[in-house]
Image 1 (spheres, chains in turn blue, purple):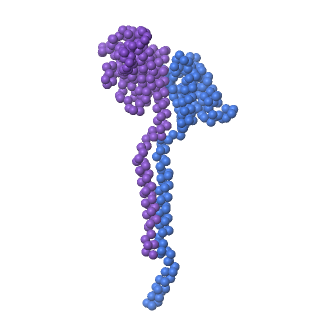
Image 2 (cartoon, helix red, strand yellow):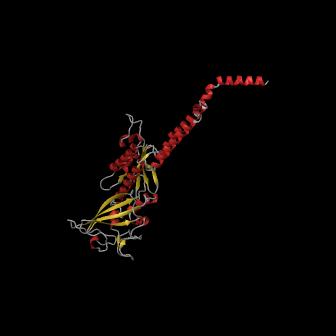
Image 3 (cartoon, helix red, strand yellow):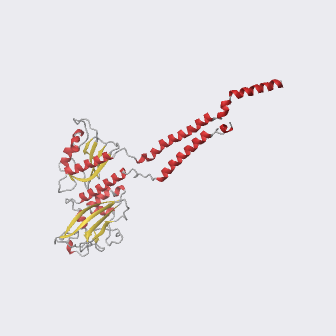
Length: 182
Length: 209
């Protein structure tokens, strides 16, 4: 029995040597490589997804172009509806006829928006509102697309309104003309 | 053969070391720059430009002639009849450092002037601070002096200003009814001009932060 055993063990050991020679040489490199490269790739993925998010809260989806456009429109409205004697006093009738009391498509030409050839599709949306310091925005004095808290570039001017024979707006001491572009 | 067996944990270690190098690099980069809301640049510059525009508009609106408490009336709102020594009407706050005239609080200034009302409703109520300064030429006309109508403290370096110039004439009436040239307590002197009608030019400067 002992002889058989030693024979068997000799047989096994000689057989083992022939079968597992390459495994013994490589140690655990396959698993080792998988773990190593896995950890490394995870770290790379983490860095690439995480780093851009540091700056995200401070980025705005509104670009400089919209901001400049809102500025320019607000400036143009104040320029075109004021007479020279009273700085920043908007002529209520002219303002409403041109900007507030018209369908949004009429604003394409009035304030220079990008639109399709026959003005029925506009690529820039604009909202023009006069807000009273006391009473907030006034629907009668608002024109363009309705603005429902979308992210928009805005520009504001402080004005008064000459509102004879127009819907009332309380501009004492002043109102804000707010232009939003998005 | 023994050398081959030593490789057992090499790839895992390598992976961990590479990860650590990467993370340290990120950490170092984050420590090296300060990320603040204004880092992007755009937000800060545009809001600043807009608020400056609104301050400028506030001065324009306040200078409209139709208001009886407009900008020139505000500058000339000098009271010599009160119980206190002569000063701007109902100004109760202490003078700015190095100045003799009492100043207004935001509410007091709003009671006295159109400019104050606009500034209070637009800026003070939203948590902004502002000084209102009057800058004028001295008697010889070769240097400028200033006094404060409102003083809320020394402005920080990122404050911005808007200004509007008001002309005072010799016969401009002050709040107490006197012509400005006859009052000796008024801080703005008659300056040396080629015209005998012009008293002085006053720059009303709003400093906002």
